Amino acid sequence: MRKSFFCTLALTISFLSNAQTIKTPPPSPPQTITQDFGISSIELSYSRPGVKGRKVFGDLVPYGKIWRTGANNATTISFADTVTVGNTKVPAGKYGLLTIPDKDKWTIIITKQLDVTNPAAYKQENDVARVDVKPMEMKEKMETFTMQFANVNPSSCELHIMWENTAVVLPISEDVEAVVMKQIDEAMNKDNRPYFQAGLYYLNNGKDLKQALAWFDKAIEQQPDGYWIYHQRANTLAKLGRKDEAKASALKSIELAKEAKNDDYVRLNEKLLDQLK
Image (cartoon, rainbow, N blue to C red; front, top):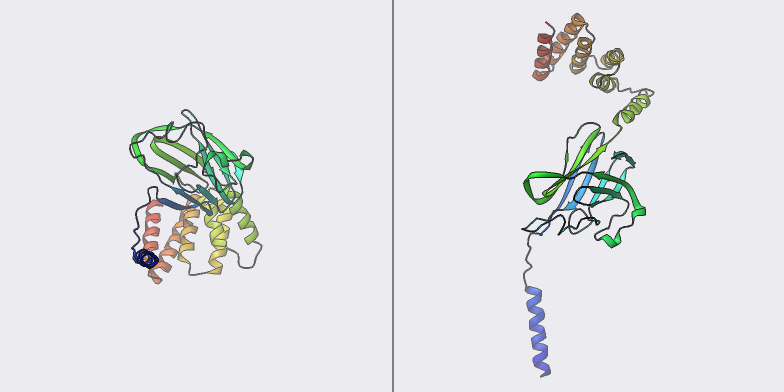
């Protein structure tokens, strides 16, 4: 009897050690999104459950209760720089993203807690920001829970949260201009001054064009064969209404671009010259 028991045990162990493991698709696959934003980035990690024939909001996801905003692990969002969520400044860091869905209003919560997977674990004193938003009805059904960044501009973007026939939008912004201007001020007090980058920022953001022109001239002193600098100098002169000088700068850019075998800048300058006729 004892011998039979040990034989059976040995066979069982042998079977388990030789058994093949089976990998199956996760029912709520995880996703991590990194979105470049402003002068830094935002990273969002969440899991994506499916509708699968169920009624979601008001049933599977109850109204008026904390929701992890996904499935499986807690949903997290990381900001590489200080941002404004709704009307609240949120310092750089990693946070939990929670929601309280309701029929006519959702509350979106940025929290210091990174492990909330059920309402009982949530502590409101850890909130960093709370934003009330109005849910919108989508015409087409979203089978898989989806979050994505949309309408991404240099200083603002939106986080869209969509599932079943419901969508909500979380506004996020960053004071990019203050950060860039501070960098420019600091950089201009150093020996290797980024004249071109500073001039380009001024040109593209509606700032002092005469200052931009002065910086492009300084950049040309640093790099006399910089055809791209002459091109932006020409754009600046054109915006100042100094057409003859703009044409001369564009022609110089074409000359240097041909020497560098850069046909793209030749075309850009030719297009600018057509506009200056």
